[in-house]
Image 1 (spheres, rainbow, N blue to C red):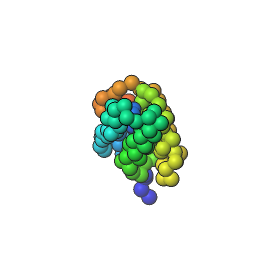
Image 2: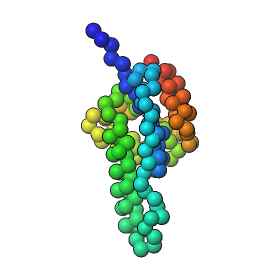
Image 3: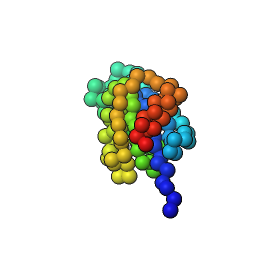
Image 4: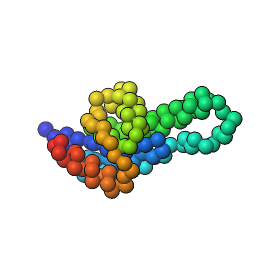
Length: 129
């Protein structure tokens, strides 16, 4: 009987950038960086506040969906970030059929490099093993 190696993903996210570090057990498999296409200054003053907010909401939902597509099958998800983005992504993931219940923690974290994310995630997942 083969033992299952847990697949874990740590995500640092804000409204503009997401860094994903994917682990197979204790081994880092890959890192991805994704960017939102939501530049708040692209539409000038011709939009009403409602139009602007609706557009931003749609852009963020597309961005979070893109992050979810990069997750694939996963056993545990750690979400980090400085603001509301981590909570919005949590809600998006929680509505995804195959990922519901996979989020093990949501933590505050200011801007992180990929190396800092990998180190923090490795320590977090190691403590859970």
